[in-house]
Image (cartoon, rainbow, N blue to C red; front, top):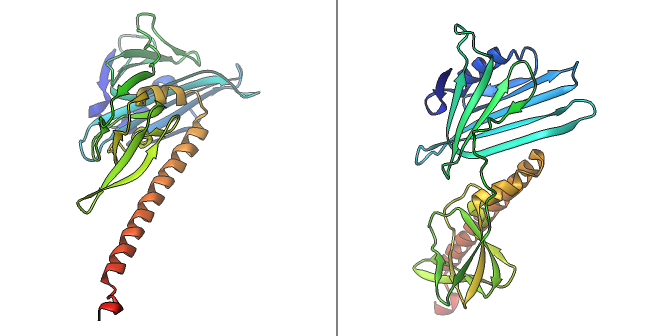
Length: 275
């Protein structure tokens, strides 16, 4: 089989090769340079199969990552029989069969995630299903971790990169922000409160400093665990949820900018009592 590393290739060309080998025909296929969706349907067997590939390039670091999703099930009534979502993949290779050598017409994906776990997926032409080779290790379910912080310990600083959120089990945590060479206390959080959640929604830079006000036990939710849990939720709901979070983040930025403008305007207004 011919192996193609997707870091070096346009997904538009890759999707054309895949649809040609799988004989997708008139079923729905959409694609662009950053991803594609391929949907196959078999009315005789009442089955469908969807393959979604996306490519992400960080504007600053130029690092490339991928996501691969497979869904299959019954057409009527609509029922999902198998769903698989692989996200934050650092490497994806697509293996195409050699037509001249008479190899079976199937597409093989070789993936590696952030933790170095490998996974192979095969999509065959003759049947509407996805196959996981037995020799491919199944990643373990990510686990929650408990961290203990002593009073005055800094959990993270404003501007730091992060990929975890925290839920307070015991103790208190203060959030602080530097404003005009002055440290301002934003809030004090207690038991069952959470913070750092924006790191899980595409904003890895911490917007404030978090410090333990007293000895505290924090439950750590990694991005890997978060994505694992959220993969069980219907994709349309996840899309809506992330959109709402992004709108809230932008609204907070606008409110912060307006407050700063008002503060600067008030400073420019002359005090009549002094004149």
